[in-house]
Amino acid sequence: GTKSAAGKGFAPQTPNPGQQILDVTDVARDDQGNPTSIKLAAPEGTKALTREQMDAAADAIMGGNKVWMRSRAKATKEVPAADQLADFLATREGHLSLLGAATKVEEVACDDKNARRYVLVAPEMKFPGLTLRPRSTMEIKNNGKKVTLRQVESVIEGEPEKMVTALQMMTSDQTLENDISVSNNRDGSATVTAKLRLEIGMLLPKKFPVPRRLIEGLGSKLFSSALEKQATVFLNKVVRAYGSTADEDENDATDIGMFDTSPREPPRAQSKE
Image (cartoon, rainbow, N blue to C red):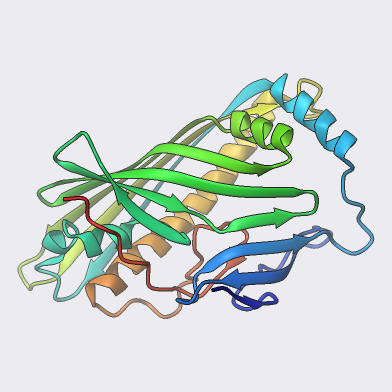
């Protein structure tokens, strides 16, 4: 069954002056409290796109030019009493702590016997006139005190079909990697470092009124800023899962995007071993 609460647990971040954002009007959750569907409404006084306008926008995207945004981020955290942290990150529970927010996490078969793969199903996003159901496949490989997390596939489904196809094409070239290393100290603590890399090849309409180089430069800076924040959030999540005390003053935003949510326990994956 699902539980519905209008905006419960999903507070839009404070916008910049003059910025218009979508309002969360309803959040459906499963029995464990995980969000399964998020409904959003346009700001008051804003008209939703008609189907004809949305189809025209889809055509413009599919016939557009590709721009590249490349971002890097690094975060380091000292973890007390963490002499077993590297071993923990090789377990199923450790893997789940490395994965982003999702309604459902399922372990699937992996050809590489030294790696494990997980499918993450994100909450359904219901925008005015547009419904998106994203999912991604992540692969985790352990090598001693190092762990590599990379995105193998990213898929968007939903309605209307033409716009969803355009959005899938728009971000089809995407690389997401996260390298985590653990360095044990003599006092039993450990230094954990996360290095994130994100590259996105995005289609934009040919008549887009901003020069490509400017888009790539500003886009890369925006993604880098978000990635820096996410790197810190990511390490705090791993520390909490390991059992250490995380910093209470960090903003524990999940990977859903513009919304802040309270941290929740991920569902247990079904092992295929």
